Length: 406
View 1: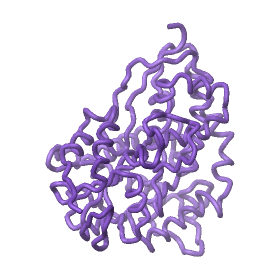
View 2: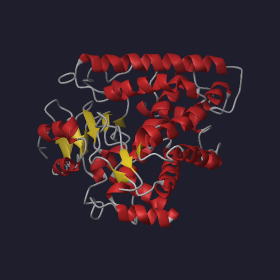
View 3: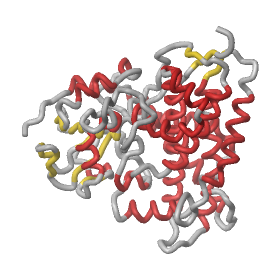
View 4: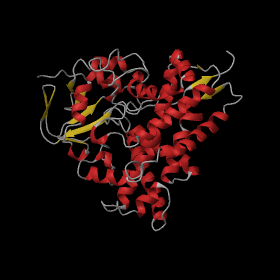
């Protein structure tokens, strides 16, 4: 099959002017499920094809397998396991999961329920007497940051330092040497170095001093797979620190924005607290925090939807487009918390299914469930709100909400 090149559609999706509503462009993109771009890369935009790719053992997550990696795509230092392939990926993920979830740490998330609820309550208490709040700065950012700092053992007072590094890293993810200033890439590279150096310093303090935090456990535990090297621990902590709060911030913020746009559902959630569980699943489909997996590479020539993708070609997976595919979901552009069979792509799929998904789900459930019950007649100040620059990790940079008398 001959694919139709759609460089203009992809360019418009990546352009900041489309950040508030890329979904009509995703529909346009889905007309060609596997589309070859002018630079030889391929964009995959439909649910079935994305799912097949994510479960294809011939696909690589390691940028070193790309034939023509762009500048900045290959990071310095040891890659995090999310950017590795089996068997290295499997070994490192098992080592991390020993301390992050079942079967070795089955009660991690449930054991944090009380602390999560208390943390949300303290943030909401600060809203008393305020006519206007910023859901991002006042709530959706400080909550998951406090959680991931606690889990990793990162001092909360250091948050302003790594906040700046994380922002520079996220901004550099979609660096395009043809259109972006070199400064964007340079800031990302420097932030990556600074963050790794910072985490390396914390790790040195943990050796020989076991504690309850994840850095301590990784530094002092010899499991059946051995122990991670210091470089591997730093890479894992770096991944968790970024993914552990950036995606959850977007999930909570996108969730509140969606509820304010659907006041009937917001009222239902106030009256039916258990609705929050399927509601968060629908949010992960309808307004996910991660829209794009920027790259995969094929170990060998593969065929997807009748299109041959050559070995080493860059593959871009449009997750948010797949989760709005009408061939998979009935009435996909409708927000429906009662939706059945909601196997969305909000956390990816396959061997790289989001490592922290269970925690992110519970954080969002508690945060949104408590927030809607405590805000007094909330209403948006601006719609659409201002968005972050990244098309990969998409969410508002601010979400101003007024409450009280109109």
